[in-house]
Image (cartoon, rainbow, N blue to C red; front, side, top):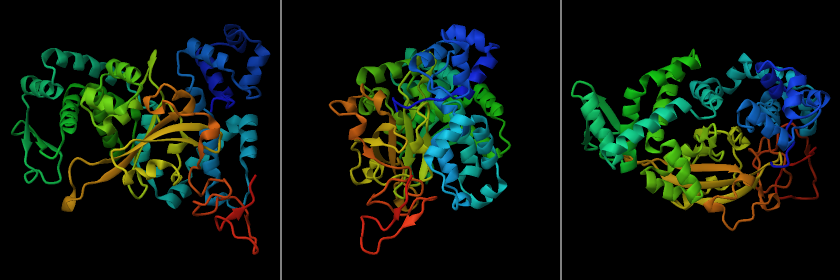
Length: 463
């Protein structure tokens, strides 16, 4: 990924025009010729690392955002669209898509918007892509999963609570009681069956299940406090999203309440400082902030404060069937999250066999990027119907070149040639001779040899 050429002409043009600058004035600020800037804006030349830093300094933004602003979401997003069955009879390879992105970025963006809005696609897929969960995720990623006002408010409140007591849960309970006339009561599982928490307004009680562990009790209490004291800020964000779907609106509000709770338990500056001191060692972060593994993993995806950014982690949560229940890209722009399916060789699927053990893996994608990932299985706090406790696998990761300071990467060779080659699901993966392949890739012509049996029954013509 470090060697990847970044063509971001459309994004730079938007930045320049938004600042009211001409090509001449921006070229002078970047100490390049106007003709060279013109080539960059037309995607005839890639951005150098020096220019990316100068642009970030001039416009005060994260340079990784240039990659996120690629037309149509970039090469991988474009390739996924062309993997749709409606293009099955057209052989379009990645080289052709790269040339299209470079030569005509605006038409690529226009195609992507039209494709994504096709009513026929919504009827064909009937997946999350047209539902409230997808709408909420799009809004979260638009903010890069960092809500500065909520973080700042939670940080101030956390400092106030620390003055009153060292125990955060006790301090939250006391504030709820003294300022909002609400008491917390822990009730038996038989009284709150299949319920984690319930607010009884008439009794002025916040009732929590005894099945919740300490970290989860604190989180539920912090979430309630945020719902009360950050109500106007949260409602402002929800209103600004402009959802037409009521379910999406409610889901987004619930997410922001949870975001505030995590920010209260793990205040930004203290949490980032602890991350850097420990090499992002999740086990220590859990204990230092009294949080669960999942809470810490999610918090890592939010560290995008201007002037004080953390490493760009992504997070995904899947069940034993491989179904995704959470995914946050943050500032990582990770293709691993965007595919509807995942590669079975990615060890996030193997963590269920070795629970509580963090498994590391270096993986390489077809686009040439290399990712360092950490995976671990977790179990839900409270049993569901019939006493069954839900299990999930949490996967987090970041670009391999940024993982050198991590505790879990110490002593490991992070060079690209040591990475395990994986894909983004068999249907769009074009790696030949993979023994794990379950279906042939779309848009590839199958080859048959009656004299030879390979590792997989699917042999195909590649680019």
